[in-house]
Amino acid sequence: MRKLIIVGCGPGHREYLTAIAEKKIREAQVLIGPNKLLENFPEFPGERIALQGNYRETTGLLLSWYKEKNTVVLVTGDPGIYSYARIIIETVGPENCEIIPGISSIQLAFARLGMTWDDAVIISLHGKQIEDHTLIDQITRHPKLVLLTDEENSAARISQLLSQYGIKRCPAYICQDLSLPTEQIWQTDTIEMAKLKPNPLNLIIILNTQAEMAIHR
Image (cartoon, helix red, strand yellow):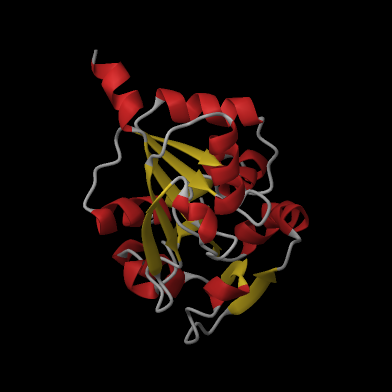
């Protein structure tokens, strides 16, 4: 039985695409995804469908498309973490999907820094209104916190919030455009990062050594 293929395209650069992902894309007849991902495959000869904010509408159409043609949906990073894949799987059904994992920006960020991330807590702030006290609670309880930010939930706002709640200066890293030519990583702290102006969509890693000491007591 034909299945809908969901391919994780990694952090951005095609070099980080897995071999099995490349194979599934070559075998596809229909390729669906954001323009920035479709542009990574200029040689693809089949039908291309660009996602431009019409995610739920397109997801409904997938119910029939994948049964008629080999269809691949491209998603950023890994389909298993804060991904459009969630909506697809819920609509089409996990039994009708084949998911190809990808390398997430979180994995690459920790690799760049030479750190493990099995003890990291990940919070996505993309388009979300998370209560201030919830965010503060996570920072004070965990030695490694990853924040996926957006224009409203910026590095400056997070810095201001931490200062407001009396959180002491903690080491921090701001990572943007990982794997791309414009990649940049700032080594800073939760006070100084207010002065930086990264792109709205970035990844912040906060290391709270006080939380780590509390855990090991």
